[in-house]
Image (cartoon, rainbow, N blue to C red; front, side, top):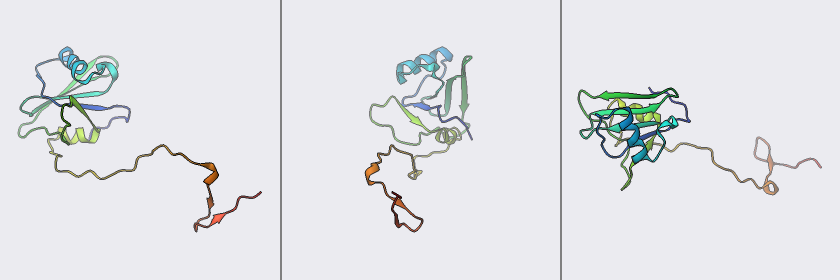
Length: 140
């Protein structure tokens, strides 16, 4: 399993790339296709036309690093369909780990997860309640 801090994002290119490119070639693809600075510390994932090879480019504060993998059998699959005209898609680190294992997630069902949101609390309508759900009147 790939463990990444939450601040690191993973971007997968929508179109196949020429994986004969090295550090400078892939970093220029990041600038062109993703519109992002390749030195930002995020992971940028590229697949070849056949879909059996993958390269991950990232900057580790001292230089570029490339992780590459070629499947002996099968293809790398994205977890979801891409929107029309998309140049890239952002995936979670867990999706990337499963993709690197060659698992096809297109039929997988993602359950809704709770995410904290912005709350607008109106203090005038706020009530105190005890453990049984009964109103408690504040002391005056």
